[in-house]
Image 1 (tube, helix red, strand yellow):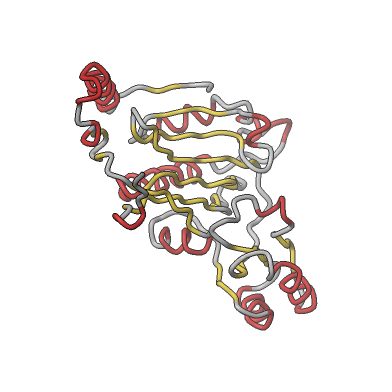
Image 2 (spheres, helix red, strand yellow):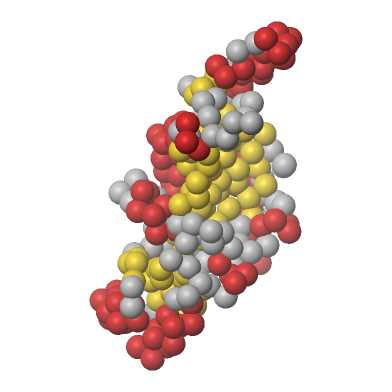
Length: 268
């Protein structure tokens, strides 16, 4: 963790910690099912991951810069999408259990002809529940990971960092407590190790920092709007394009809470 920004919403975290301590002191007789934080009670629930298409569908019309896409049930559908949207496109295997598509060969990039699309579709159609076709985004200046996650004590926190397939390896991150302001987000981004890539490192193009901050604000806003139903919303990568060219939320992971029923519980 490179940076932590505190603001008035830290009072929510402090209050939650105080409640947790009080419950612990109360002992086994305490009503531990009513501990609340960030507007939520700890009712029994299970966490479910949405597939990428379902997650992006829930995020449409929210201001998050998503690529144009279509769920395809045949190679013909994918070819039609390529013709309508223009080349190149990407095909992705989607499914609730597919969290890292590249590790299973579930991503086919830079497809420009019907033959390429058809071969790529047939290669990945068996990996998940469907195939998502999307318009390829322009080459990025930098790749970020943007996540809104829920901590059992403090509630939501916003994670920013170096993204892409090396995100877990590099661990170049900053943590903010939402709702973080645009200035706080910009400061956190410029504190990352990859910041020089966004500011014109060795004559390279400058990244569109304004659009990137706007995209992160939209991600944060939507996560907070989902409230108690949301366990995690992660964009990895959020592509930072050259100045004036915006940003693109390429991959989306969303995990939501669904209340359990009596039938879901197992009693000894």
